[in-house]
Image (cartoon, rainbow, N blue to C red):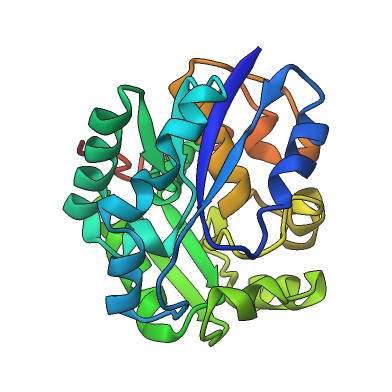
Length: 254
């Protein structure tokens, strides 16, 4: 059995994770602890506060008792909102306090792109434009080129959590660009676990969603590989799927 502990901010789409356990159909467990969020707002200052070390650490002991072998801060904006260096300091602090390997959703996006061999992306984010811009800056720090982006203008995780699949698909179509090798949907507040293959069929390319990437990153930390094509291309490849493309500078500085 492999157990990845998830520290998830508040309540929005945490039910994606039990669904993911079912889709994995293995002995993988994903116990989750909902951390406090403070003000639920997609605003730079609120996102930095959401990702404060004391908040993230709230559920560490409970997840350790649940048998967690690695911990994931299951928040996109609560990690990339710290900036590249800040996001790495955030998970280093978490790892030290827990005595376990740790990472976050945003760092997981970069590792997942490296897994797929991709360096040019489109971003479909429910956030306001300025917050989407912070994610683009985070990716640029890792050598990832954002060739197109669309922002949904949601004001909070509660609002994003109410989005239906058709609205997410519409934003993904709006964001997509012929030069984008992969489309990223970076918000763990969006319910996406049930239809990643539909998104990929719609766009004709790999799609990375926040909750999908969070689980994959946790399994990466435990050296666990699993075949689960119902969770999209990321879970259905052993080699970089874009291997034939010229490298696009996806070296990750850690």
